[in-house]
Amino acid sequence: MYDEQITTGLPGNGVVRKLTRQEMPMLREHLLRLDPESRRDRFNGFADESFIERYADKCSADGTVIIAFIENGVVSAAAELHPPGDEPGALPEIAFSVERHVRRKGVGSILFKKLIAEARRKGYDSLRITTGAQNEAMRALANKFGAHLTFRHGESTGSIDLRKGPTTAPQPLVAVGTDVARAMVHFNRECWKLMLAMYGLRRAA
Ligand SMILES: CC(C)(COP(=O)(O)OP(=O)(O)OC[C@H]1O[C@@H](n2cnc3c(N)ncnc32)[C@H](O)[C@@H]1OP(=O)(O)O)[C@@H](O)C(=O)NCCC(=O)NCCS
Image 1 (spheres, rainbow, N blue to C red):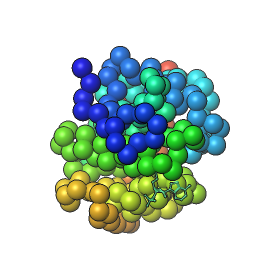
Image 2: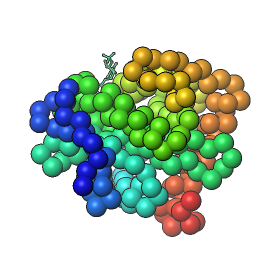
Image 3: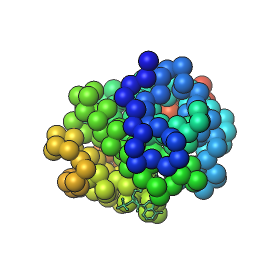
């Protein structure tokens, strides 16, 4: 029923595996449990409960893959792999959230590794990651997996090249100039599309 689980190197008796479609409500519960600062870091700004509920519903509906750290039936951390938008050159986006009590124990790294394996299985060549410019933890995690983040307007954006073999050893890919500008325009456009869709102002992408 479940895909291959990871059980080693994790705190407590937790496991890491992909959520099934029926389990997607556990993502919403996890995101709602994040404290205000973590929520801000995760969504790079304000995100109230209704935003998170709509966001989680959208993830269930649009084919987003969730790799979760599950302890005693509760999701305490998640890695999200969002399918690329319709625009030419759009890349799959990834995002991470680890609840405070399990941070700095390697959970984010294990989620990242499994997410990359899943992305490769789906045939993706490259992944996009965006986070707040001040988010040291996410920058450290992303750098560990070969992302080179570039700063602009309070955001850090980067990409991870999956064609370069295993990413356990960092292999930086520098995304510069027009590439980053295009990525940021795309990311901001996707955010607005998501917000508008969630608030019923246009059809979901
Ligand atoms: C970013 C986040 C996912 C990291 O998860 P984590 O489980 O603590 O990560 P890990 O324990 O695997 O640590 C990964 C690396 O980052 C480093 N790191 C983690 N937190 C750090 C921090 N606050 N400052 C500096 N480095 C940090 C670790 O030392 C580790 O490096 P190492 O393996 O070389 O020692 C977690 O802090 C989080 O959920 N933050 C809130 C939400 C968020 O910011 N999401 C990002 C938006 S996409």
